[in-house]
Image 1: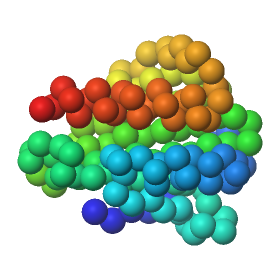
Image 2: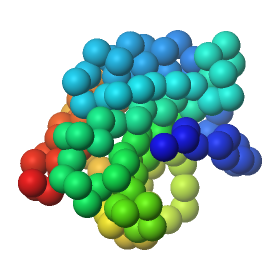
Image 3: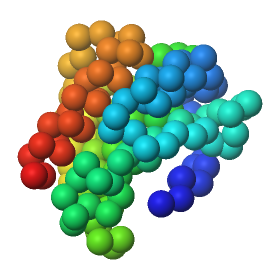
Image 4: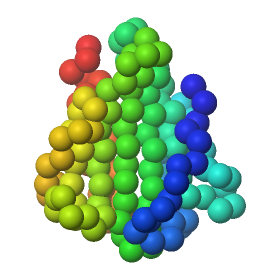
Length: 146
């Protein structure tokens, strides 16, 4: 699976927080669920951190899974989880924090297609706490798939 191409940052909630992206990368590379991490466009000026997850930890119907993370100096973020099924279908959800007119600043785009949005309550906005919340949800998803 190739990493995602850089997406438009029009309307971005601020500049990328490179220090936080690097912190999250260090957490991801030590996680047994993660096969590979990388930065887009590069490690020197990262705007996006991606993690390719170990497909062997999923049932055979899931051919790939990844997490795309954007974190901004405003403490806004977007963490997008995507599963690819048989290279054609996807199952995805997203944890977001940014100002918007349609929902609370901190919100969750629900699976399977991120279309429905609900308010999200997090105990802390510290990057490692948010990381823990997301990875726990992904681990629960994998358990449910089996």
